Image 1 (cartoon, one colour):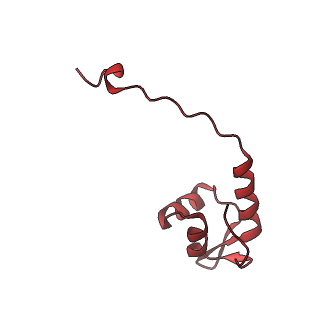
Image 2 (cartoon, one colour):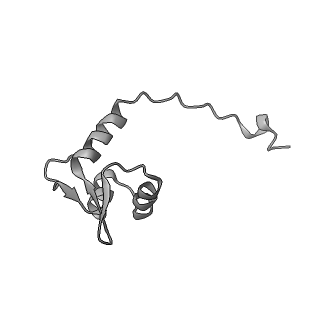
Image 3 (spheres, helix red, strand yellow):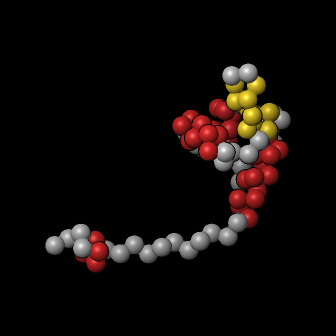
Length: 81
């Protein structure tokens, strides 16, 4: 679980990336897609509300995971002749 104990109330992109262990590209893609709750702009700079992010992470952790789909061998789907 992500530890927000010492995190400031308002997070910078680099802090969110470190907490979530995501790349810079993923951070900005999630922001653009509206997938990162609590993200907002101050001037030209993105910030994220820690409490909203933490609540979203807790919510994601509670969601049931779909069962992994079994992958068929390549010869069963016609990729090997």
